[in-house]
Image 1 (tube, rainbow, N blue to C red):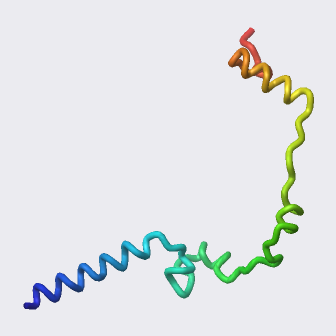
Image 2: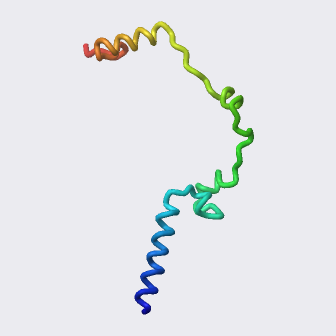
Image 3: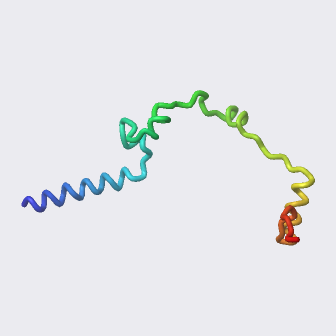
Length: 87
């Protein structure tokens, strides 16, 4: 009888470990487990996320004629136009 109970407890413990394996540390534990986790453990965002705040922190890259030339060059020749050739 003890063997059946022991096995049931082991299976239950294994099931809990498998379920918690995909969770983030803050979801698994009430407190930080390592000193590295302490750095960001109790941090909440200073600015709430919104569409406007995302626009403020997104810096799109602009294409210049030289980058367009380099992209076309690589597409056509499969070579890097800026590579230093052996002398």
